[in-house]
Length: 236
Image (cartoon, rainbow, N blue to C red; front, side):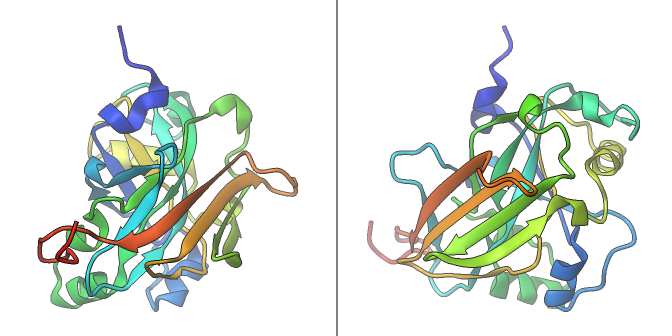
């Protein structure tokens, strides 16, 4: 018996994160606006569940961690070389997510021509909400993503601003790697990314554009990363 898609963070194998899929976000970081999709991978160990008893985002010692609120696409039907025309039949639902980023580590990696894995892959660096069934989102291009830090609105942008829409993303990614059931595609973030510090409270949500009520919202506390490793505080 196949596992329930509702529990995808516990057994899904890949987090595929699309870079610079909103033009204004690319510009705010001084990056060129891409003419084709590109992506990087995040470990599934970076998931932080909004349903946890006390959901937290851990800030590694000495880093500048930014929030990037995103719409996650959850794959149900696996496939390789999927066409854009058939792509949406592979989608089993959506989720609200944050792609947390150690911006200083990412900038250093970019300058050195190295991968972003460290900057993107820390534990708790992919906060994620519950599965939102496709029936609740008939048009994923008609959503608004928002994020607040300590009650102050930081990000508020429509998914209609995506440079590459979900069918194009699925077609491109599946031309490189097989998409498996439970895989997640993070579709990019609108402008307004910024710093999260220990002690902050981060709230975010997704709603149909123009609606007053959110389809889903979640809250995370920001804390210091505990432990005795290189990026830990030296205490548990």
